[in-house]
Image (cartoon, rainbow, N blue to C red; front, side):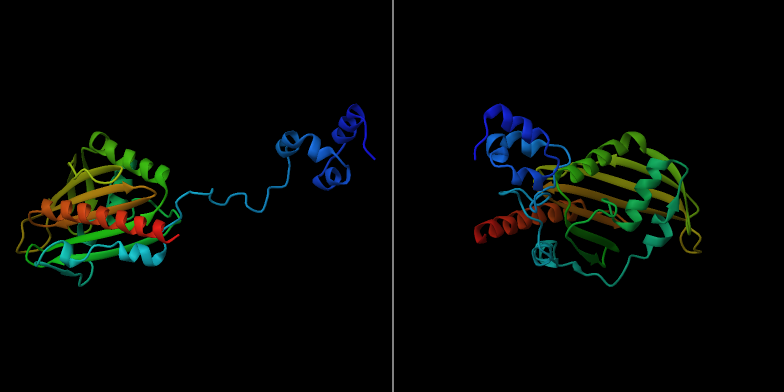
Length: 261
């Protein structure tokens, strides 16, 4: 039995739950937009899922395939033999400047994104001739999270251009942070050069100076992060090659994934 329009609206306004609405013929059909927007409505099973056409996270296999290899950097590079000796001695340092401490912590842990969820893969390569170590990471974090990290990196030469920090083996460190240019790849990018200079406690070395290049690039939903450090002269070419080859490989894997779906 159908109800007059005025009576139908009155009955629908008294419905308190989705179940009640379904028992009154004509309520959902008569006012679909108001029923969908009603506060307290139970979300559909698909709520919170990715929208149709939205890029899915990288799979673990795709992230691993997107990593660079020794062939991308040259003959002097090889798979790492372990953490660089300067990591604990110089990067594990403290400062009384909170934002600069955040930088030191990120450099030591090599985690620019904190503990954010998402697919992640990493590889490390050593250049024994230069006593350098390059660490390369691929991560799915979403453009907003990556852009926040890029904005933070962009501001560090102003907020932490020069500061002091106390290290374990080199005493007080003089830390300088400057911006570097990166190859024009990906959708957005930021690069830093961080130089840490301090007095060494070893008998055969009067001072120690670590130069570390940090590069972060957003490629669609994903990000690549490169840290390239040495106690000698850092290889800018290695940083640039890692960024260029890595962005190309990640883009290719994403395109291949789209054609297979």
